[in-house]
Structure formats: C-alpha cells, structure tokens
Length: 392
Image (cartoon, rainbow, N blue to C red):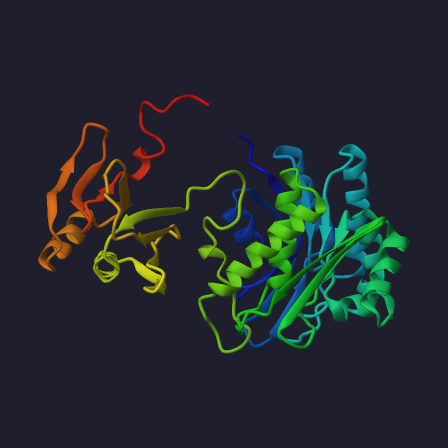
C-alpha cells in the first residue's frame, strides 16, 4: 500500500477554512500525505480578509524543490498565487516537473476572490494564469472566475475557449448559480460529463473550491479518471458541507474532520444492520447506549444510528424472525470503565463488566433486547497493530 503524495501550492488562511489549511485537511482525511509551498500569508476570518502578505517567488520555489527532491510527488494542486511573477515562476518549475514526470496530474484552482468577497488576485496575476493552465491537467474555475478569464457569458463556451487555448480540461462549478438546483460540468477536448444536485442549506461554504481541487488531486494521484476524480471529490465536499461545525459569524469552515468513512479508496466497513422484533424497544435501547438516531421509520420497521466514529448501525424489524446471535458488534470507547458503569447504573444489563483479554483488548459484554451480542471495548493501537500483526 502506497501513500499518495500531494504537493499543494497555495496561500495560508488564518481562519483554517480555506487555502493550505483546507487542502491539508482534505488530503489527510482521504489518506494522502500533504506537502506545501505557501505562496501568501493572509489574515482572514469568516467575514473578510484584513491582510495579505505574498511570499517571495524564490521562497515558493525553494519549498517546491525541497519536498520534491526528498519525498517525491504524485499530484500537484495549485490555489492562490501571490503575484504575476510568482505565477510565471511556478509555471516554469512545473513545466520542468512535467517533463521529468509525464502524466503527473496538476489541478489548478484559479483563486481570484475569497468567499467573503475579498480580492485575492490582481489583473497582472490573472493574466499570468494562462501559463498555469498551459501546464495543468484540469482547471476548476467557478462561474465568476470563468467569466473573468474569458470575458464570455456562456459558461460552456467559456470553458471550451480555455480548453482550446490551453489544452487542459475545465470543470465548470455551478455553486454561484441561483436556485436550489446545481449543475457542474467537466469539459474535456472530446467529451463533456455533468452532475446535478441540490443546494445544501448552509452558510459554512468557506473553502469549497480549495477542498474540491485538493480532493481531485488526491484521487487523480490514486489513478482515477478525471470524471471519477470529480465525482468522488464532489461527494467529499457535499458531506463536509452537511457536517460543517457552524463556526464564525460569516461564511464558516466546512466539516473536513467529520468526513471519515464516506469517501476514500477501497471497500470501507461503515454500516452494520441487525435484526430486531420490536421497533420501539430496539430504538430506545440503542439510543440509551449513546448512539445518535438519524433515521426514524417505525412504519417500515427501520431505524439508523450514527456512532462517534461515523459508522452507522441500523435495526431492521421483523417480528417473525428467529434471531441467532452469531456475530458480535464492537463499540470502542476510550472511557470504557466509566461508560460501562454509567450505562449499568441507567439500567443496561451487562453479561460481564470490563475484562482484560489475552488478545490485549479490554471488553465488556451485553446483548440487545433481541439477543444480538454487543461489546464495549478498548483496544487502542492493538486493534490494527497487535504485536502479531502479519507483515504486508
């Protein structure tokens, strides 16, 4: 198993919602390794940008060279560039990199304006974006950025203009459209792919473009096609919007840290379903265990719960089912002994309290109202990395 190495060339956002901070969180949550070349330092929060300090071009290049020479790179994401000279110098360096690594994915997000409305690129810098699009695999402008790059009103015509002029694919992002229905479109030299969706009702939209581009860079580094990378990155952004923490008084940050098992590489075990015979009894039991109920459908006999780690557990009711407890559900918690004592005092019956086991886990055992086996346990590093773990 290899770790995707993503080089992020972008500005720093002191509020943690966009820029380098959003990029690092995105790549980290997806399982990659984020490396950075900081182009600008900004003083900003959810309501505005109060200061921008560009990093000299030679320092940007020094950061790029330092990480590439030692760690290597599997994909590059470009965001905010501090100035026209920096954009030209970065483009020249990436041209050499592409010559050394043909096919290296490069995702360019032409950042011009912050979500709060503050300008993050002057006219000479925007004029220099052409060099970056020449070397990019894909550019990801939003609708105002697309119009400013081409002076064309029709988004598809504008995207085709950029594809023809620079040879990169273009993702038209529809987030600035009016109404609840949204559409994004991937324009390639010989193909167009579109996605439709509903607008998510939230003010926590700071960093959506940065997050989308970084997720795309990760998936391209993993070998996904352009269309698949866009589709999976869109899903990451949507989950992060749904689960935003609601911070700040303006356009708040997204919930990067809460996108745990929703998007990623390979099969993910993130849902378990048990059978019950009485809806109210089962739903009440799992709520009392501390799980958050997110689906309540007594008419269909179905309830779904979310755990602290993002895994969901559901109960499907079948009054006539004869339940055989052949599989156990394990719920890990750091405060095992205290939690078991608290649950026992609330009336939850345990078959035995916390015990140290030979496999280096500490476990307490109980059953749900229909006899399904449940363990509360604490394993820590010994779940995935026991001393007897097999070599890869």
